[in-house]
Length: 553
Image (cartoon, rainbow, N blue to C red):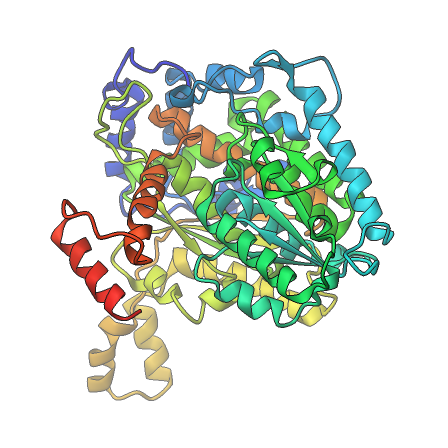
């Protein structure tokens, strides 16, 4: 990321003036009725080839919006965007570029990284994926008894699972009849794998071992368990290696596991796991859908990349969306972000977005290693909107903590059941309107009078039934859930995350907190397995829990 050491963020004129604006706008309701409301809707919304972002329900006026754009310029956002696309080492702590945009870029001039043409390497792997997927779909690749593979199990976790799992579910409507069923196993307790293999035929099951380092504990544990299952089921002398595919930056480790060279696919250290679904980490998506839909997914991502790189800041969807997040978190105090897709096939989107945003933005120091005196990132949660309405939406309406809310709505029919689609759209619009308008006591009193509620009862209920309103939200409408538009949504959220990191002066491409957890797990595992005594230097709580857990095993 760009060196932002010249001036502290909170000392910048735009930041300080935004703080004053936020205080003035606290409790302000944007005009949403009549001509004024129509003008606001036009001025506080953006269009992009069928995508539509409505942010007119934000407590944001035009001067505050201009200040957010000025803040972006003061923080060098355009320069940081150019550095990202140019392949500069924006991941400063690991001294690497972050070239996830190259994964979906068309063929072109060389992009050199560590003496290798990264663009050529990307297209080589795509072509290898193309051939591999075609052979699986044609039944030319098979297990030990010569029958075609009917099931593919992806063994991976985090960035090696969440993006692909989200995309496979989101695009399940596009699965061709020749494609195998695709499953995902990520947990380290063995339950997912145990429950799954009861339904599988080992002779027609293909496992993808997906780990950027090929050292991820959960993934290797499941890979060894999968191999053991095949060994117990296969006849003596069966060629089990053909049942495994590897996706990793560590080719030697894949070879040591026994994965054949032709079934080892490369990823690179200049792509973070949470940004890697467009690489061979997306092989489960390609196997589930075919390579043509997978390439359409990449095309959609590339289209959003071009928009992000080329569009002026005021009409740039990811830029405006990222600045709205900064506004919500740092000036409105909304440290939670709720994502509500009104489309059942996007049920895994909130989980994918959790990793993307919280792993990228959960930082306590800036790029120069200095402690921050402002919040970065939000607690991301969500669910399909129609389920949220019957679970946690109550907190959004009447809870005390501010929450930024995103509604995602498909313009076209999601299921072919027209009445059902109309209901989902109406629910999304109704929930957004209810968050903003609420219900005041005068309206409630009139309703209860018409319903014949006695006065004493009315007075007792008014405070409980009052909904304050004034809860801001954004609504993102997309044309339909197809590979191209899902690709645009993925890249939109990736770039929105980058914008926030650029404003806050943090590195969104490392995750040192995660690395600490992995190291401590390796240290504790021998003691839990009874292979070693617990380290007496451990804290009392960890030692006590070790004793309790070992006594139960």
